[in-house]
Amino acid sequence: MSDLTGTDLAVSAATAVADLLPSAVPLTVGPAQVGSEHAAAAFAGAVRADLTGHTTGRVAVLVGADLVGALANSPIGGLDLAAAAQPAIDALAETLALSADAALQVDLSLAVSDLGEPFVVVPLIGAGIDAAVLVPDRLLQPRLAVVPTFTPEASDAPVQDDAVPTGGGRRAAIATAEPSYGGGEQVTSTRSRRVADGPVRGIEMLHGVDLEVTVELGRTRMTVRDLLALSPGAVLELDRAAGSPADLLVNGRLIARGEVVVVDEDFGLRITEVVDESAVG
Image (cartoon, rainbow, N blue to C red; front, side, top):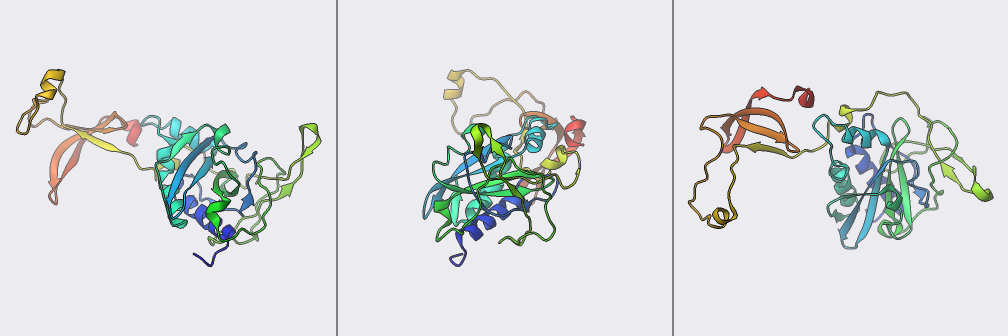
């Protein structure tokens, strides 16, 4: 990607995020903009991750209240925002020819300061500005194009169909304005009006989120003495009779039971009973 400008690279990275970040509607990549201290003001959650490779740096993804609420109110229990965003951040890092460490959810007020250096913001637009990607300028070498400053409060101009094309093949435009903030300070800012009422966002937002699923054959209790005495060949007696169904748990919550089977030399579970209909319906 050496032939890309820094702005092109930022848009390409944001496009990778847009394709994988949970959303009830497709996300469109807006134009890259210079980040400001106000960049996180219109969002409800933030995730950051350290990138390593030929260089190092920190990136962040900001998300709206819809996704934060959907994760918190999932029928299978509260889901972690960082885990939900990890595939998107991994894709962002790959676009920059870097690797991402484990994502970490951070307080929204720290999302910008945690970057610790000048950065570019690329908004992700669904029914409004639903998310944003923050990438430090230093990771977008060889150069950055001149771009406007991003802050979240502005006029209610709609997204236009004939908007400026972005490097990822997606199209979007955001109108700018200069509203007056306290003390007479003028801040150039951007915001997209909700272009459609859109569906009510809930569990459908989470359909692409990876979850860790556990199959439990049984449990037992042991003293520390017995635990330290374990050695190869020791047999543990579980609290379940032979032939009893195994439990299927998601986030520690019992969802279903089934029979352990072998599929192509790997263990599998044939579901025989759904315990929590609300979590899988």
